[in-house]
Amino acid sequence: MNNRTSILIVDDEKIVRESLTKWFREDGFHVGSAEDAAAAIRQLQAERWDIILLDIKMPGMDGMELQQRIKEIDPLATIIFITAHASVDTAVQALKSGAFDYVTKPVDPDYLSHLIRNAIKQRALMQENIKLKEQIAEFPKLDEIIGESPAMQQVFEMIETVAKTDTTVMIRGESGSGKELIARAIHSNSERRYFPIVTINCGAMPEGVLESELFGHERGAFTGAQYRRKGRLELADQGTLFLDEIGNVGMKTQVDLLRVLETKQFTRVGGNEVIKVDFRIICATNKDLEKAVQENTFREDLYYRLNVFTIFVPPVRERKSDIPLLVDYFVKKYAHAMAKPIASISAEAMDVLVRHNWPGNVRELENAIERAMVVGKPPAIVPEDLPFRLSEKNNMPHTGSLAAVEKVHIAQILEQNNWNISRSAEILEIDRVTLYNKIHKYGLRKP
Amino acid sequence: MPREIQILNGSALWARNLSAIARRLQEIFKATVSIVRASFDMRAAHDASRGQTNSTLLLAQILDGADDPEKKRIGIVDVDLFIPILTFVFGEAQLGGIAAIVTTHRLSNQYYGLARNDVLMLERLEKELAHEIGHTFGLYHCHQFECVMRASTYVEEIDLKRVYPCPACAAILSTEC
Image (cartoon, each protein chain N blue to C red):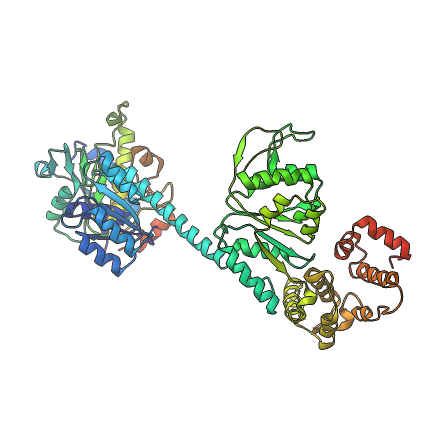
């Protein structure tokens, strides 16, 4: 039964109002009627009507004029015009003015029945759309970025300022400092938030693969390209393209990227069709791009194209006052995820965490809390639960050779990361081969 | 108080054509069903500009002759019926009232250029009578595909549904007195 849908019939002919009222009531609709514009406005002010059937020609205020008033009262009302004499002009005028449709008297019952059903469906979709947009608008945008320190407050202000614009943003910061979170916060606060944010990790793939990832490829473009594939640039249309580790892009892809950024059009690998796209660029790097420009490993023109608005994300060691907040956030997050009744951390454990320098930044801190939550027992995390003996850090040889300090530091990072070579190398900001060489050099062994 | 339904036959159909239908309606509505010959003032309800008959005006005639407010009265005519906003109707009823009307005009195959089929026409008439009487008992249109209370805007839709109400509509009907 459609008893939740309400229909208001506005027509100066009593017979039309009566017959339509009767017809819709048999369908279980809540039906009301008004003989002129004034009565219709009274009805609209008294209650909300889903669908309004509106006669175009009425004495006094006509249907077209009344429609404007109705839209002022209820912008979401679905209006269907009724006209005695169909003409292209009235039809165009009605539809241009935002009506859902129009019908000519007398109307075929099957057509009217379909029209009402479609109007109900369209209205339901419209309401669902509004609801979803409201839900998206309520998504935590900056909540995931934790920090009350002055350095982070400045970052928040910069996010809010730049999000509303379409400016290219470069996010600079150490590995693990939360650059991607900031990119997502900018996107979800921007006008493009209803479209995707497409992330591409430029440092994670060889140049040929990166090119195909960015631009897509046509079938047969290279061995193994059995199907046409859309690239990330195409997927990001209307949305945001987040280029992570932009400093690791090779020279050829830099040239291609520059061309796309300037023209906002490209062709797929192995294709001729020119594809136009509209996206916002956000990029991130932990590299010294200025030095890379000087060394001719990063194109100067691309650098200036990308470096329009820069946000520097402070490392954790420069915002130690945020550590308790970050710890609290991660404890709650993992307590919920692991369904474990650990709600806090002891003062001693917190002290150890605050004193640590966190070379791996927030990522390292989150990892440490996650592991502590696995081994920890309720009600609180204690220093013994921490996945590494952070206090040992303070026992690092303050005297002696640089090699001795390096050996202890590498051993600690490896232990903290369960001897995960890739992750440790990332934190140490050296490549994996160099890390293997140093492990060999210092005779470090996995326990 | 037992229910009563009176069929006012203003069509060319003979009473014997309608007796089987009357028994079926008796079964569905648990009512005493009688058939009487009736004549309507067709001229008064005729709309020359449309070449059709205004069903609401015929409904008013049925109501005028009603002597018992508890007795449902449904007329059968052969003319093409309309209500002002629609191009045609198969019938019309007072929702929760006592009067209804049905036409055979668009129920016959000949209207659609097909071979005459009296059995099919009577089946359609039976369903339309049950549908409009259902409205007088307060039933709304139903979304169940086979329910007699499903709205039909073309004749093939009438053929698709059964003459009986679905369990939900039947339950409402059984509580109506």
